[in-house]
Length: 532
Image (cartoon, rainbow, N blue to C red):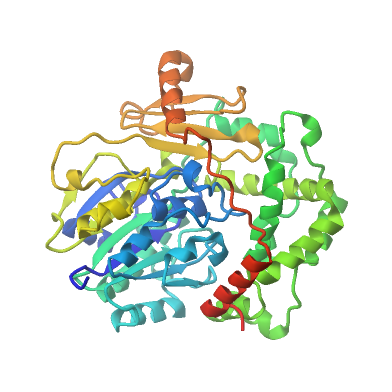
């Protein structure tokens, strides 16, 4: 159809709502503020998880993780039978594009929802040469209209990107807040290049912890840190493997180890890994087998916008087909027990880092409450700010509803359109499902968030503390009421379990593939330009 608007979906990694929207902020965001004045904003937009890959999968499918099957950042692939909302856009005549970074490799399975799926190295930011190229393409018709572009931005992820002029207390109290102010200035170029007629959707995948938030005694994160022995942990974290050997290797390694992690119970002390200087050296020597030969011209590309992405492609560090045999050789050489022991050390070191940033450890509002702003000139009311709760799987459903897409093509999803809220109609806010995947199972968290309460529990570990918060009286979640209100906890626990599929979670799509699938993957990578 030719009368559909171009749609720009901007997803800021680690973008918590209270730093982008509303009063009392130390951030300076005139461009997003202007977007709010010209459109509608929802400060209470709730994601299921505080990590990237599952959040994007929920955004693009309208499904929660028990139904789409992607539970963690690494080691999962979206099943080929899971429909994507971008396919509905394609049926409506849209050309669909993705500009992504971080862990969102094509092999995660999200690429099949797009006509063109461009992965870039995390050093390619809006303020670099990559950003100049993207803005130029957006401005001068590189993307075929009507287009749908999903733009994934990495500027707020550690290491925070703060341009020199924004590196002062005037633009934020810490590096995270200053990075937001700095990114907002860059967004002005994007908004301008998209044009006044574009339907712009601005949101985030998950939030972020700063120094201002503390985990309270008697709650789930301190319990997990004690169970994991965080204070004793040492060695290589997964992000270091990605630096050494490339993100595809990390995805394949997790694909082998994730099923084994499901059987672990860390309450049995025998499952805890050992640490030591020799252990760290041995792990690094083993992982050197996964590292390709590196040349001087490769080293010169490290951290260089555009050049690093090209080097990663050239050296096969973004190639599933090249990473898989390397990892399989390592797995055979090490054996199950040694591989699991090494992976558990890496996983615990990852948790040690993640609990500082909040990623994948809990579902407090500073981790799962993200902004949503929608501007479609002449079609959406200007300046509307709704304090009602909406959910991440609702976003694309609402976009499809607003552009008049065929509802029958959408199918059975967890999300629902909040168009009635935009149009001022009375409607009930649906419950948001929350989770932290349990690998090991001792640390799995499930829960729900309503407009009044948040409740979380450990479905496979009765020792994991229950948490109940009255969000209207205690929006900062400082007072755990679980012990005082067991009946309320039981009701909300039943509600959380009712939101899961009656026949169980969707099976995990294997990361390893057979020969026919490998040939298909290799051809697809060639089509994308990743293989010669």
